[in-house]
Length: 174
Image (cartoon, rainbow, N blue to C red; front, side, top):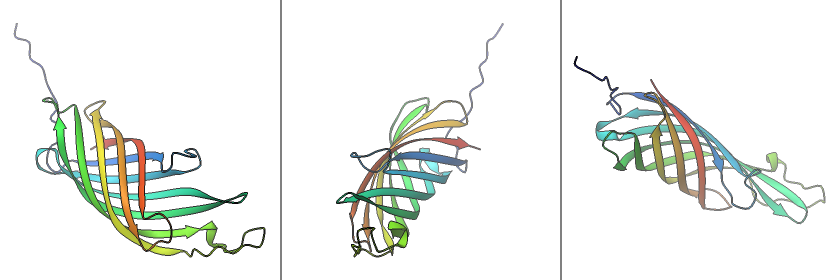
């Protein structure tokens, strides 16, 4: 009797994936400083893929005894390339680059603090570039677990032009 195994093909050109990632944008207060990201990927050749993401991020800045929330709504588009991966395409390390546009809101657009202080930062459109490293491993033929580290260079803002973050997520491949 001949034993035959069937293996699903992975990383096929044109496959579409939907992903969700949650993570932290600060090492000081990770529960209060977070991001939520959802996105779409389209596989290219040799394990590379394009990605389009929407992200909501919130970081609290301290002033005296007050916590001033800064919320960021961004759209991102980019390209990711495999750097290392195993022969069976079960796990890979990818590097990506992207362009980012969005809008940033300070203290829910309220310039006054309860003590009468005025916030000088104004809501604004933002833009920039991003770099990211992801470790991606297949949990099944259609589901990947993602560990992501990324940083962005942001212009058009009056706070933090360099913004690192780290997150965990899942991607479902159709």
